[in-house]
Image 1: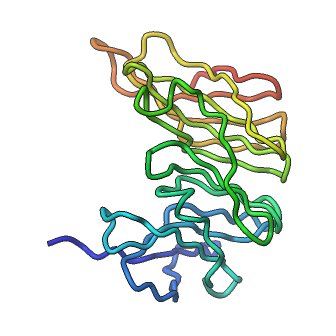
Image 2: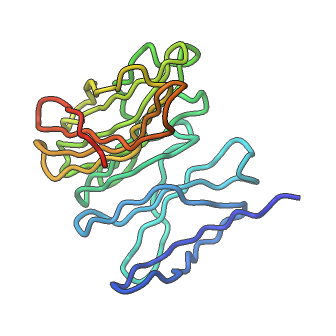
Length: 231
């Protein structure tokens, strides 16, 4: 008659994964869906609590890893997020989180070391519901003044990939390469080593007749995205 959602964490000790207790009491069901641990900024995990995973509204939940245990951390407001897809914390005083609100519109929030505040995304207007759906699914931040986010949206059932770049003040749109004549496509993850180098990966599928889903990779060199041939 339905399962009970419990928070779970695993810790890599250099050899193997081992369960790590999440000793935070939650009155309702709770789950975690995004984490950032880079050794520089705080190790933060974001998720939600609710009476059930399908119940609304979801209440945002945040935890911080101290090195020995998970402890409560200030969470973004429920008015910003009803779903969180990713979080990145490049410094102790800056985290960025991406997700969507109750109307399924993409949203973002920034942590300044004291509190979370909403940040306007540069989502294509044509992707706003009900004309199309989608949002950002991958995020990489290397500093307080550079983040790269990737995702996708649909307009009239035609899929597109796009990226957004954070400059410390605002998000700006970046065009990505979408394969021609695709039935569906999705960029799911991104990693950046500098403002001049990011790699994004995902998948695409041509229309019928044709093969199934194929791997997709794109490279950022500081000014534009280019297509890479994935194995």
